[in-house]
Length: 178
Image 1 (tube, rainbow, N blue to C red):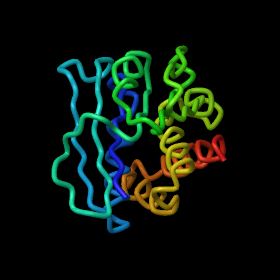
Image 2: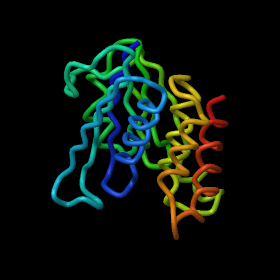
Image 3: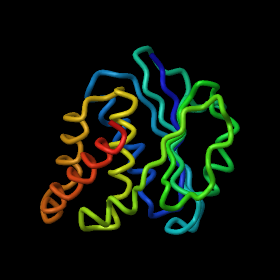
Image 4: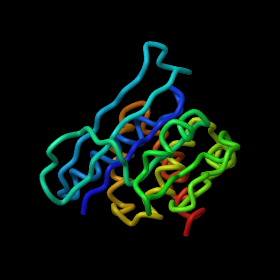
């Protein structure tokens, strides 16, 4: 098993956090992983993406040309990366931000209302956790409890109060594709 994932969106949407969570959860489950972030000098509001490899065999390089999955958090990300996704691959689209549809018929497309669900759970900043939940539920690649443990690990001290909110967003994301 080897998954090569591109997560892309505007800086501040939490795409890099999705990738980091996938990589850390993969390590916790004994997979070989890489996480390679890439962002412009603008950071918040500029383009940001990351590449994640999750594999049961050693990973030779964090660089790949044709991902098995794409998580597109904004319109430019879908336009830029859709063409490179492997045939039979999957594209996860933040349908509250991206109005275009996946054009290729050889891909599985999942439209996740990240912003709407984040608002429903009480904080627009947890849209990335909604998308992470949808990805985990649809792929079955990682155990939900591993991701929830990562969320507990991310938010400690004064930020520990954010754990229930993020777990609720994650679970709601899972529910929207099951």
